[in-house]
Length: 476
Image (cartoon, rainbow, N blue to C red; front, side, top):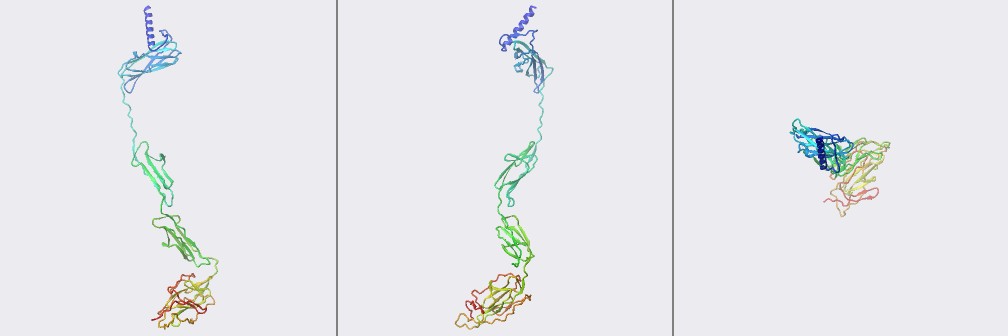
């Protein structure tokens, strides 16, 4: 009995020494075999992938007060292993865990010892171990297969510049498998983007999506430029015939950079007459270096006026004409008096009567209808006054003016009639008779002009009006 008591005392002395070495302060009681304080430990071993063993130790306190576990490193087997943590708090009636790593895969056993000290200053030795039945062999890590990668090329975005017809531009982002597009760092969806003002620059970049590798170009810059040479045609204006006009008309405007085509023929700016019932189509085209904007074709069918008084048909009478003689020093012209008709020379209307005209002159005489009348017959005559030869020159530069008896004129019609065409005989200076050019009976005054004879003398015999030629031509 005495040996057993000494042996128990020795064990308590050793436990006390260990507790003091671990930093215990104050009086510590070592729990004996019959003591109530205990914290039994269990061990669980596993083989790690690197070929070493790992042992996890779990201790459970049976005392309803807190405690502290302190590792007895000197008694750790194998001594080359690592136990963490070396000190750990034990909750009241709770568990604690320490882990032993770095145990060789060829080791046969592992063991951990320690001291648990409760808050009532009672300490107890604790420990546990495990025997390895075989060898722990390292296992190769699993092989990770990289996902397949697809090589793609980005489709090129398309920019549409502003035009004369569309003042803003646009760009198209294509839909490409494995490719994302961005503008100013923001991803943009595939589609068309409009309203890009002239002067704007857009930079588009392409990047590969996951699982794809991008090859080729990946950035594009588009600068939108304002169009040049834009022109807009001015509309052609159309005017139907009225009761006061003899025809309708259309007016082609003058526009820089624009040509107007009438039945395919380029037509200069101006106003052109058109008869009632006819149709005219005009197309505008841009000249080289220009682009046409807006409407470019116009057409119109000219309507006849309605509710107008019916014009009275009146036949023209050919003016009388006599060639120059030595006695008269000039020819003569007789303007008939016809109701509804007026005669003019060089756009100057002549009152009915007889006129002496200078020799060597050419006259264009035009007949026009007065309002409410329309012409029937020839309305244009040309007379050439010959220069007589063999005349006595005398001392005077100007021949005496004598009265001339013009040939009898046909009496004016008492009522409208429609005679056949009348062709005057024109006597030239050589005495040759020629026919004047015929014009259509449009009722519109055509432009007339004297082809010669500046300073021509015209003498109205009946009224005493006298315009004398500048100088009589003499024969040698």
